[in-house]
Image (cartoon, rainbow, N blue to C red; front, side, top):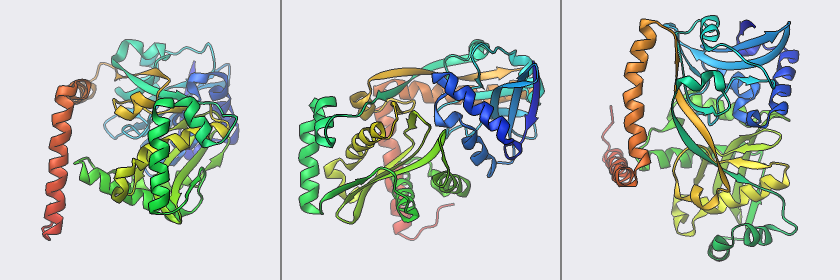
Length: 367
């Protein structure tokens, strides 16, 4: 197997077509986070992004996007943002993990949402986790009929809340593919406030992430399109979602809503309307992403499995990185896996968020 390394911006049209072909030939690689457009987008803002191209008899048959730091520490491209990771390849292709790392100039490759079918990496997986999905198909009628048929337990209360919102604010209108950049900025503002309110790291406080989302918003391709969906009450946006879609898969990514309207569950309304409209747009399933959330249990039709772990070579940098990262991951996974630990942790983070908000209100600058 011949392996060459490329910067994302150096990928030729023929290489991108071969990558798209590999996505089309294997349903497990249809996720938009596995498309070259996502790697190219991250590469615009992260200098260490590279793509390993595997060739058999001169023909490109596999693609691994990754990030590499100056010490040779490698990780899946967009680690922490990407909801799906893999070496995308044509059916029947195999590779040697150690040979791959040597070609990439890395002593370790870290991943946390690895597609389960990556057999050459299987021995390096330290844990597997559920990634819920919604299998969707278009209904014969409109949104209310689809909702009653698909989620009869949620339909009555959701439709009642939607009618209340319509009475309080204005008639509801849903835009599946909103092209107004101002709506994207509103979503980012809501999401930043939510991160701070719940004590989480504000991703949009990092300029490169905000710039990446803005870039992906403008990408329009059969295998990758940045889709911004917005629910309006009258002319007022009340909830929004931004995520990438491929020809068949929509990845749930950033959802947020106007916190003043929390009593109407606008986030749930947003997810339901997005799923219904995705089906009408040709999507076959919505990937909700790894993680235990109540709304995922309500909405999912099945679960995929994703893995996390480290592919390593015998090298001191690899050993040091794994020793540093694995305990952190283990603690986080333990908390997330047990409700008796997760709920107190959520309360603590919300308390931190409240204190941060109070400090800002009092005019105290946070260091």
